[in-house]
Amino acid sequence: MEQLKLTAVVLRAVDYGESDRVVTLLSRERGKVSAFARGARASRRRFGGALEPFTLLAAELRTRPGSDLLTLESVTVRRGFGAIRGDLARIACAGYAAELARELVRDHEPHEDLFELVVEYLGALDVAAAVPAALRAFELASLRIAGLMPRLDGCARCGADVDGARPVRFDPGHGGVLCAACGPAASPGAPALSPDALRALLRLQEGGLAAAAEPLAPAVGREARAALSAFVEHHLGRRLAARRFLDEIGPLLGD
Image (cartoon, rainbow, N blue to C red; front, top):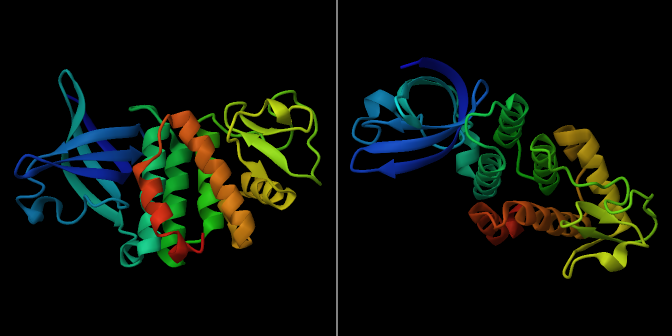
């Protein structure tokens, strides 16, 4: 058996049996891993409240022979991001970010840049209200890390320049925006992007979370949300549970 020391964010915690818990962690060192926390619900002395989602931990684990599931032996909270838990909009955004990160990567594949992105986004939610621009920036950065970045700076079908003065079709099946010539080839239901929405997405794609300081106009935000939601669902093959919850509290987010 191998002993491991990981720095990780709790993405999900699921109760198991009467007293145990299985947690999904995104670690800096080993990427996404799942771990069995024996007695986590029976004794708060061992793990306390450390195994709640959106918690940054220093964790000690060991491997289990013949299993990808690790055993969690001890944890120390590095940062609890406590302000997130007092605001429904922040909870919804953090939950969506955690589920998206969990679904985009395979187990036991290091993704230090995704780990850093999740920590950065949780840190932003911990100190300020949730805003649509930051969530769009997180989506775009996560997709880039997973090798699924939508093309926004040219036609995803033929590579031609896109007319930035007219609306364009955004087709997840083709991988991004389509020029005027390729627009008729868009899949049924492919959303449209106005010039303002396309410029906003390009800005967030290039600038990351730092670019989210400039807010999105409501109409632009709705277009950007629809486009990226369609893109994520196309590549994952389903709508994330956290996306549905996020849609329900949209007015709280100003989205």
